[in-house]
Length: 169
Image (cartoon, rainbow, N blue to C red; front, top):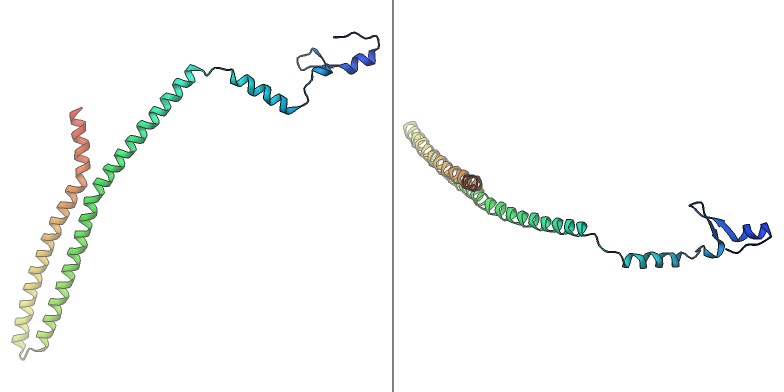
């Protein structure tokens, strides 16, 4: 620092710094571009903390493990949903078939009943229709019961796999 005899000249050249010391005006950087280049240069020479690198590698590995588990679970959910979807389609097909046979049988009964000549013939047709309709209904219930059994088996398959894995461990 240059000493001057004039107090006003000394105050113009010397400025207080943040830490309490005095800095010459020529040492103050006013160009923000030069400040960032100094920061960038100092960052290039720094060393990455080994603990941070280990942590980042562990997190990346954990993420890969979680991602693989999610893929496996998605495949398992897809495999579990496929038989249930097929069972629902079988339910719809059975309902359609039963409704079709019911309406066909009802139409045939109505046509035969209109052609009945006596009351005894009409009662006989009614009795015959009631017995056949009851038999068709019971057959439908047996089919639907079998479909429910299939659906239950398909729904419990993933649970069986989980319990089998738990039994092995």
